[in-house]
Image (cartoon, rainbow, N blue to C red; front, top):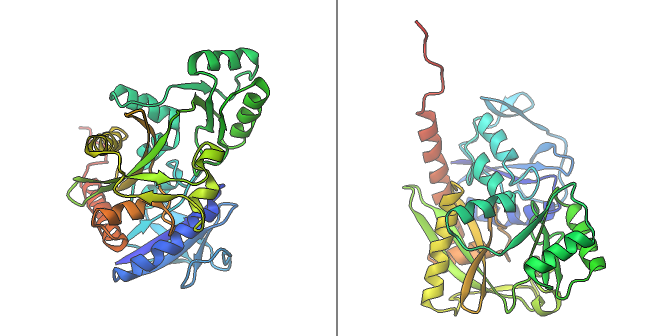
Length: 358
């Protein structure tokens, strides 16, 4: 099978995407496939790459996309049976790239335009989860034009308590996140300012304590059934000092966070997490794969967020969780390719032309 591996992008998580692509490139080759490497630069342009994934992107062979046809280089159409895009953040996992591939007749692994957009915009997802009775952390939404002042601070503290967790609505990898164990007005305003650098809207939540972070990996099989792998418990040596799993500890091999599987949380909580993860994936109309993150505190489970394009680096938790459930990365990728092609076949069979008027 000819697999297009698309990576990079205009995002603060550009480097994470490159590392993810480098890790899964070998796994795709191990599955017996041929790989076409397409890198997206920080200014959003697509280029064909040679042989291996590298941080430095060669820009001598630009890729152009034609709606309804496919991807081209030097006027020649690239042979692509299926594509996978471990891209993150704006333009990578928010539905934009997914919609572009759909319009250009490129079957893409993973969530589609709708589910990617819902997953990216955390408050939208949280409201959807509430409609499905999935427990989440109480949140105050700070809009793009909202005044950040004493009134907002007092409202947040009155509703959520003095310990606050503040994050951009549409960012990932813990970029732009602040944990305020005892919030004051100045620290609160600064945290909102930082969050707004990465997203139009900012979420203010209760800083859950005591806190255990757990994660569950989701894989949609070719037949439409869902595998919920894990959960695993995040062991983060920096959590006490930072207050959350930050970017550094997510992607540092030495001294960074690790995944403990089995979680040690007990069979009842493990099963609750797997069930809630599957419900969340179905609620957003998910496809392919996702990672669902949870908080566990005093025996209660709260869904934190769903990631429709989880990291695939050597340190990332989705591959580790899938492997713990008997799905090494190559096998998981092969299942995802089959699932994407099955979805394309179904979509191709639908009627999109208008009826003939007589």
